[in-house]
Image (cartoon, rainbow, N blue to C red; front, side, top):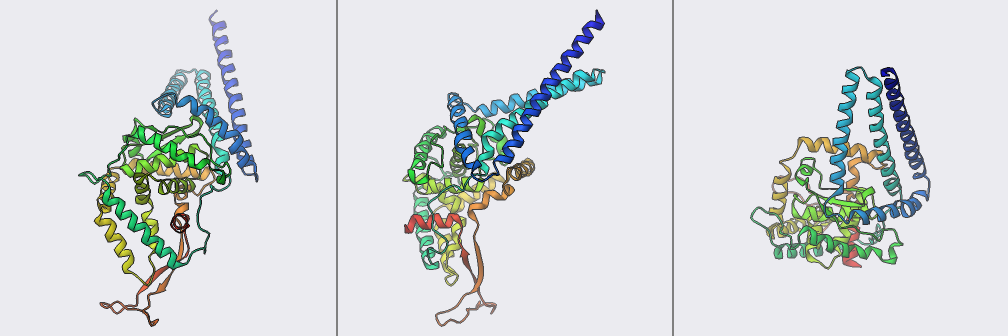
Length: 408
């Protein structure tokens, strides 16, 4: 009898391992197939619109019925389940039940491969689709003088909005909205992406972003938000400085709307906020992109960039920067580890790692001499050294969309 029971158990665990192996094989095949197809011209765009988008629409409507982040619940269950299976497997193996232990590890592998397959189907195509459309100037459309004018208009408005904003005693921007209110405001703003001029590139579904319960832990990981596309959820760390959780919310919603490239998600979200009629949203975007626009000052007018900086710091920009610096200085060790794995994930997805966050902020330029009205190079009155300025030869996407916004 005992031998029969042991034999039946052995067959049971063998069947379990076989089923898990089949699931692993099928999931792996799906992942490989998607990885191949998404690199074929035209397939990624078709897959993003006709495969990923309907799945996110369906699951997003289901998960939106829950007021809390299902992603956090999913992670908690996944971690607890994985640890339980590993512990049980180790106990079985340590007691001589190798087949039982291996069967539990096979189940764990099957679950991991299944989740990976679903995630790849939902997100893979979006990484290789056409660039996200944003109204912006073409390279060379405007002169350096016109870009300097754009910088002047931007920093004048930025200083004005800063002076009207409320900044608390710690130096953080005070939001007129709760996270829940902002979620509804952003849903309305996102409707502008349904304009026919964008050619249906963006999904017309915008989830209600969710505040994460584990926001403090997210800060430890140097993460401001995360969108788990298969659940159609945009999750935001609301413990970070105010302007960051606002811009992060817009960024994460762009992922849910089909823009997985990090630089493009930044670019579109900045454009959306910057062109809003809501002054608070505009201000948050301006705080984010101001460093990308200070270089628009002409090289022969060095005082201009100094004047721009002086104006915004006098209006409260310095307090916001200092608060931001103090906040993030508390988190380091885990943040480096998180950035390491995020870099690997983004490179595996076909991007340039964490550098992809900066794709929309790059510009090229060269050093040029600062000259006087007669064309002679100006020298430093203290050292006698010749002065050089920086002249942009290729403007960034951010600079070009701001130029198109102000100059039309």
